[in-house]
Image 1 (tube, rainbow, N blue to C red):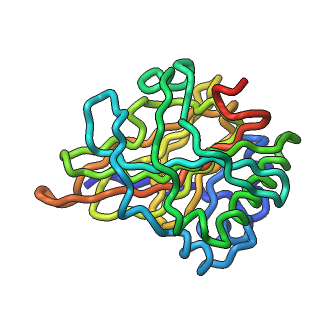
Image 2 (cartoon, helix red, strand yellow):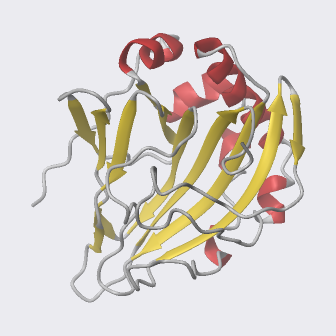
Length: 247
């Protein structure tokens, strides 16, 4: 049986200090509610659209294990606006596997982006970012991901341990079903220290300073030999000044 390392949840109220001192924080679902000002019911209401994500047609490893949607927003304090739909782009410096090409995905599920809690979530995370680094407005890319085991194995980060080329990254665990694996690993970008753990609770959060740490998630497999499973996440990246590719 695989050993599961529990998440090292950051003590309440010390999230920004942890980001400044260690480059990352791990928030429990209750801490996410406290940090965002959203109720548990409002957060749970954001779990819509993952069952109808279209397949990712850009996987260069030939896999069929990833489905996703993607939309962009600008967050300036409490003002949150969706931008005209645009491609997702990263340089090869940050994504050696999929960098250097424009990847045009279908936008976020209307049922998600239309939730009243959605702009409040983005604004609250933006406020946390501004408390660590006095910058903004924040250019936010939002990704709905499902990694499944229909081919026997699914890779949450096929590019390996990486940075995203932004200022901050928020990775929400939305749900896991019928899988093993999917361990999260966070390493210092310029040192030997690292941490490994598995996010299990829905709406727990890994919050990263992308300049300070690199991160990855290990492959997933079905728990049952002939079964299927999946891992759902919501990834929000916050970048000051412009979206990647604009500057």
